[in-house]
Length: 606
Image 1: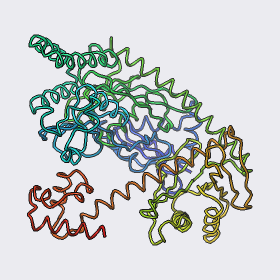
Image 2: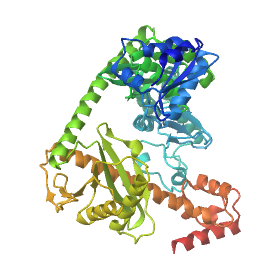
Image 3: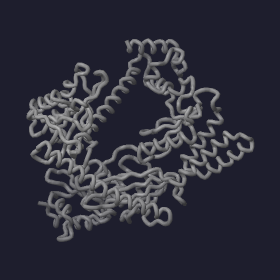
Image 4: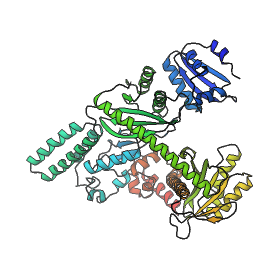
């Protein structure tokens, strides 16, 4: 038993970080403090502790302390320890996805706009980040409709002999074919696009209005009409997205908590425009006030995944360590960052909106969890499960005529889809198109790992397939001597329509159907469809990778030349479709090498 009294007597009052350890040396909780003695003492007072805090204290067998020079150092060390060890009693932000951007290839004669996610290696301009891929695609759709800058791949652009459908419907100026738009005219559209993405809408609207009047004076009424339409589109967007009196970049972050759950809502403002928002549902820590939740979220949100930090962050609650946060985020952003709580006018209105949205979304999230629980209970009843299904796994197979076979495993629980537990299996060494062998291999790989102590055992195993696939699953589990997993097959039935699925009990072979409005069937359909989607995604990625890897085996073509070929033709398929004359236009490719490339790729197709 931990002797808290003796420990507290010798504890310093300096700033630092403390780690609470369990019986097996595992880190239960990591915290920071301006005054270590005062903070750690609060866990051992006689009254006023929450149930969660009392449960933590009961598990403590040791506390390790690291003294730091400043509160900023303590804040950073706490963040790094939480990120590395993921203690169960800390707030954990489960989001490791990078944010998307809009990319403008300014180095091209006729630049293109594109969706971009990942490292910024390409030369050009990046605008964002945006909260979701949907927000980027919506913006690209608007830009295409308004400014008609091309969005096609470079290989497609270079190989056009006539304009594509986008030009015909007024969504592109057709720079791929000479005679439709001059470099100067196209550059004007690119500049308008850049001004809009930089948030300089007032400057852009003034420019468009002047140009429209000039065109009208020259009796160029068609050009004037195009400029009028552009001006109208921008004014419409400004009225719906602009924040009056707000310039530059800022994030507005609001937190709401109910029934032991939290929602943190982030509103993204870039160059004075609201470009979207996103809600997060972090696991709460023992110190689960809204202010402490918000403080931990801000730290993890900006530091964990190297997200860009705006110069202004507005939060819904006053934070204790705001000065340390300002200093840490300023170091991270390399420009002065200010975390604010007290704001006025437009900022106050948008903060209030973020607070209301956080509360509304949290209520919807809690209701959705109740719906999920109800569906899991319905499945327990329909499948006559002995216990409530905490974890369901579903397997599916995808391939093209037996090639590039991929198996998917998706996971579902009381919190919905557990995407961090999703897995893909590249299937090798089987006869093409043998789905039974593919299923067997995927299941063996998954459950051999379980046998070796990796992963969590599911309560229910869904198999997208009929009796043959179910038999494979039962055989694998029996061979590995894994028990207490209920296997259910999901066969599409004779009509292959949703709602007419036949379910198969792996243990008894019994077949049955559920009513189309049964919540258990809705749950099974959702998980099955998610497994199917994930398998297809994996298969397409593998197929694309194989096409690209064909370039890696060409003699005389190293990484740099391969990169030059892909940059010139846009894709591996573009390289494969090129002839000798087209290949020698690529820097570093002479005729002899071009002939060798064509010969090698043709041999690969035979």
